[in-house]
Length: 574
Ligand code: NOJ
View 1 (cartoon, protein in one colour):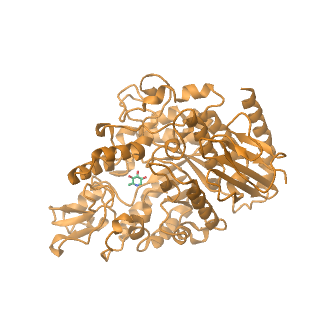
View 2: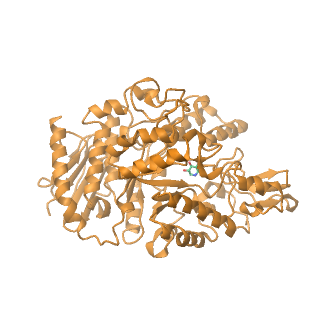
View 3: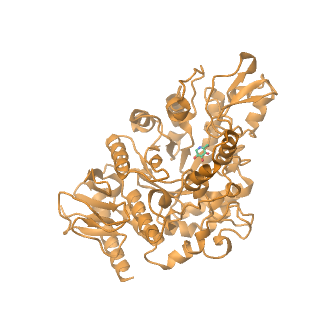
């Protein structure tokens, strides 16, 4: 307790005095709220249920706004909340201007938004316009006849022309992205599930409908859009055949095709530039050039790139820290002068942060989750942090297929069943990497159903909720939750952690990630041990005279050693 107070006092004092001197030399044009934002990703279905139907909802989120405020986050990215038949938990939108019944009403949305704004929290909405639901009115019209005015809102291939060139579908049971529809004797395209037909961005009418939708939400006062799967929105509609084996490289052959940049410039001109809204692209193509083409300020397209190279590294059986360091360093250097990146290691499509990148067995769970949090909050780029990771929530690791709810996983299970592969191997893999791992209900307290719902939760609650929950962590000054609050405060008050130049130290060290961040006269050092054993490191200067700004132990180690999963952050004397 004593150490906690001392550390906190040091951090508060130091950050207060730095707040002003650090910020001075970053030009006003370079400083942006969305660069400095700490964006908390909130999965509404699993956050808090207010009406006992077992599904999280908007009123539930509103009831927890003070909790969210207490985290020190400055923006929330809300996964889709629009009307949807929920084939893919809201990523299949049937009406872009109304709220999903399970989540509440537009009045609930308005009060959530004003409650957030009153607390200084901005709202980033998920915009799902690579595809809609097959239950959207546009698609119902489109499939009704070949001459319907909405026919060209989607991609159709008339069956009298034979089978269309094969396209891979990520979510389809047979991985076939063309679905035959006997009503008009034609195939429609769906890169995701057959209930998620791809929209035809070549059609100016469709584009203008999307811009109107964006204006509708922007006028409501939201603060940004996260563009779901947008790198796939433009297609090469000459439909060339792809080389054999291409399906393993979905991004290479399907992303950044056609006139994607033309559409983004148009979207920017018609919507993004007219409102105070930020934009983040899900996926960043195949190269740095692709990523720069999306987000360099002078191109007037989008603002933040959200690339998967780093998050994709962790596999069942581990990952190489050297690889992780190399990826983050490469991306940082490619964006040092222009463009802007996000920093994240988890989201609703990935397994849990601590289970994948850290160590979820006690006693290392808390230490490693704080270490990973330290990493995200001390790198250059906008920090994206997934709900529940502030508690060190872990993978649920379901053993039975009947526990899973995620559509692509259930489809793939059927696919593998048909191929007669070993389903035990499939289930073991799923227990580690399934998206349901990160979607289990939020763990508020040790009461029934973790305080998430008074009804039956839509997805099983992680069995560890009695020990890992907000109520117990609130009381413990050294909990991951309280650590998270301290580190967000540190980042928010020290622009060096947002804008400062990044330099990797001890590059070939396979166990320790060491780097500095430097801005004007300020230089910080971050030391992270990614191992469950003590590790050594070597840097070209001493740290004895530096000020310890944060540590996940009661005292930092000196002399080139770090304890298991130690994370120490120093402000150095120059
Ligand atoms: C990416 C989203 O993050 C994911 O959850 C969704 O299933 C696909 N896009 C399809 O919309």
